Image 1: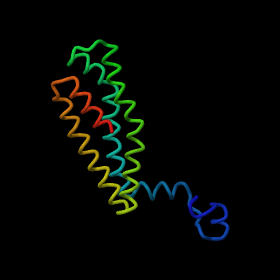
Image 2: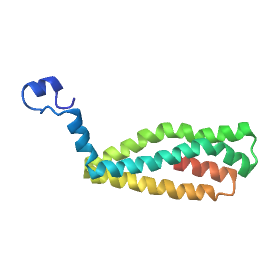
Image 3: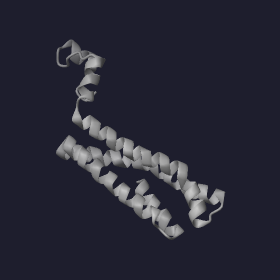
Image 4: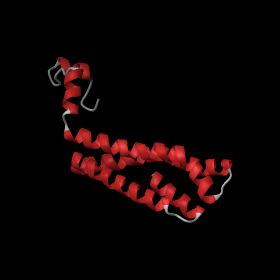
Length: 139
C-alpha cells in the first residue's frame, strides 16, 4: 500500500479498522459511485452491443462475406484492449488535477463522444469510413 503495510498501520493506530459492511455502505450512499456506475453501464452496454452486432452490420450494410465482416468487427474488440487502459490513464490524470470531479467530467466527455461517434458510424455510407469511425469510438 502507498502508506505502508496495512497490518502495521492498523497496529499503530494510523489506520482504523473498517468492516466490509461499513465500507460497502459508505460506497453505496456516495452519489459519485452511482454516477460512475451509470456511466460504466452505458459504456459497457455499447461495447456488448457492438461485439454482438458489428459483424452482422458489416455483412448486411456493406455486402461483406461472413468471414470478412467478422474480421472487420473484431477490430472493435481488439481496440477495447487499449481503450480500458487509455481511459483509466486519462481518468487518473483528471483525478490527480481536479479530484473526483475531474474523473467524472473526463468520463462524461468520453461517453458523450462515444455516443456521437456511434451515431456517425450508423450513418456512414462507405466501408472505409465505417471502419475508421469504429476504430475511433472503440477507443
